[in-house]
Amino acid sequence: MNVEELREELAHFGQEHLLEFWDDLDSEKKQELYDDIKSTDIGEVLQFFTKAMENAGEVEKVDEKMEPIPSELIGSVTRSGKELEKWYNEGLKQVANGKVCVLLMAGGQGTRLGVTYPKGMYDVGLPSTKTLYELQAQRIQRIQQLAYEKTGKHGVVPWYIMTSEHTKDPTEAFFKRNNYFGLIKENVVMFEQNMLPCISFEGKIILDQKHKISRAPDGNGGLYRALASCNIIDDMEQRGLKYCHVYGVDNILVKLADPWFVGFCIAKGANCGAKVVEKAYPTEPVGVICRVDGKFQVVEYSEITLKTAERRNQDGRLMFSAGNICNHFFTTDFLRELAREHEPRLKHHIAKKKIPFIDNSGERIVPTKPNGIKMEKFVFDVFEFSMDFAAFEVLREDEFSPLKNGIKADKDNPTTARHALLSLHHRWVLNAGGRFVDKDGTPIPAIPSNSAQADHTSGARANVDYCRTTNSQKATDPDEYPVVCEISPLLSFSGEGLQPLCDGREFTPPVLLSEGDYQEDKESRIDNN
Ligand code: UTP
Image (cartoon, rainbow, N blue to C red; front, side, top):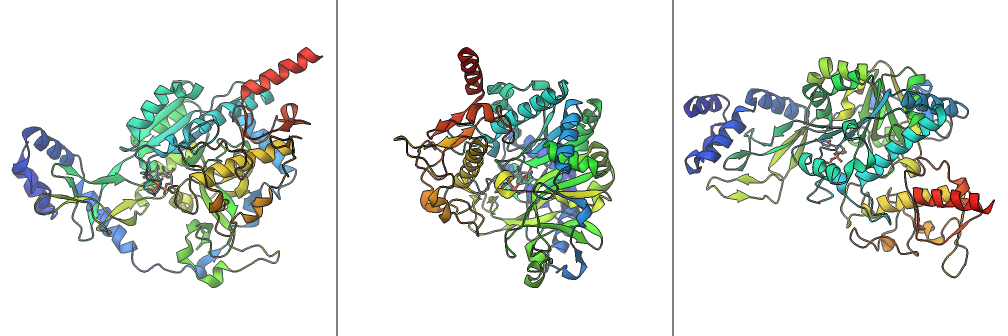
């Protein structure tokens, strides 16, 4: 260790405070700090900081430069009619041919949810107690099965999982403990995103401990750098993959490798695509996808005036209505181009945070108000580099319910996530010809009367009065709104295949349909014949 040389280097960048407690450290900790600093490209980090701060000034309104996505680049589950079937078949064919992979971004710290383990390990209180990771793993298995049934070919959908320093070890251990949820280990590829130092508003790198720099993951847009540095695109190419569905960990309804979406993007010749949901109301705080100066981009609500947010088309729909839900399609060729050429041009956004730090006296302080910034790239900031972009509009109640907040928040919390899934599965059973009755045989109305109290305007589907269950209290109360009905993803990906099991049947909640039920049902029907 050449500490004097390091001290000089740090002084050159105005960061000599990183060695302030050097003399307090034992030799092991000295080595750790030395390695920690040496492994950091301080010049690069400070450059990121300067640029991010330049961009962080007054938010520029972009109203004048905005145009909606051209209608010919939009597909819709409600308005695309016959084309949907073609897209579905194409998507399944690509899955069967082993051309499609999924990529989960699971490196976030999940601070709003406030648990000490990765968000994917969270159990929102479903009757099955399945975690987000398990639901996703089983949806992959189901889509592989559907592709096989359609084509007779066993295509594999490899699952790439981006973790970070915070989520890597627990995620790996969790998958191992659960035997990769029935997937083949080699087809679950974990890789780690980069971490960046946290910086005070004055531009000083923050010490988390006397011997350790404070760091945070570099945002979900850190994906592109990690894809290159961890040789993930090479791995995709070696496996012959052509299409990648990228998504966030927290959407309990996510349809992995969704054949409609994949088939649609292929049909449009897109190298980059996004699933969107219709913005519910003009002031809903959701980023919308549109074109700005001719380039595709996500525009945040703060970047437009109310007048623009309220503009409507002749059909009465909002003009800027394509709400971004962190669900993207990429060709592997485009991912390589992004990682190679465009990644360095992505700007960091800043998030002002309360960052624990070591004060001048050597005490570790947990601040009560923001004292510094984390720098993050956003996954969608690459849309501007796509000349072949397409957007696929899906129904929010079928496909989007993110778990962002803890149980006490009034939206995007474990209860709203659980209710979204139960309500979707309840509808699947009804559509497959099933009926629900309570314990004394009284029919449960298809539209529960208390659903009238659901708060659609805030985006929270559940009225807080009904939020009785917590993560530890499982949602098996038959009176819970909505009807407690869960269907294993191994049985149905999107409501398909349930008729033999549900048609003409009565169910009393709580209902949990799993693959075993299907088997039993089939056997009993065979016996009866
Ligand atoms: P969010 O922006 O909601 O962040 O991430 P978060 O970390 O989950 O939660 P908060 O803000 O700390 O409460 C959206 C998606 O992007 C992933 C998350 O794991 C989630 O799937 N993400 C976010 C990363 O993979 N890496 C990051 O650095 C940040």
